[in-house]
Image 1: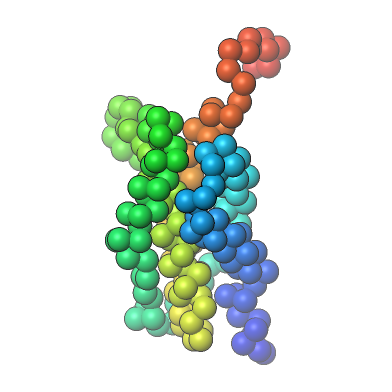
Image 2: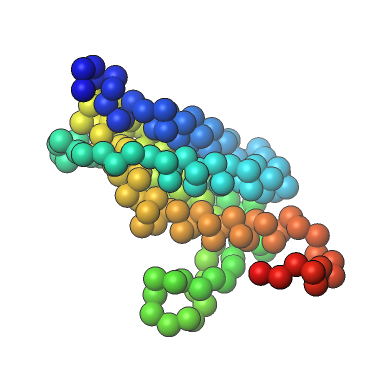
Length: 180
């Protein structure tokens, strides 16, 4: 690399995730004033973007693992979780099959928990990336990609499926000409 700006932490794909993650975090931070239908509409649109942008992140070699930090407190997480739980109300809980677990028993999920967890990872990523050190940026990108692959990517997909069912017209007859 001839220049520090050629480092993968400064790539277009990283900056695009930063942009989408920042929008998500700002929206979640102001969620108290949003109504449920606006929230669901927003989340249906931002989830695919978060998924796409995270899936395009480069592999990053971390030169100093000591520079990795977490910032969001348990209290901050709980405030967001409780706010989201109230917003989603009866639509908060859902059932899904965890493909990584043994067996095919359904597992109960929570939209509030999914989005509070995603917020925590995004907020920690953004805060660490803003530090004025290459090691912090390496850790931020490496960690958000790792957490996407093992945790929040799955939560996001499960939550998106629930959001889809919440907004699509119910009671419509299926089109028998469409076969999967």
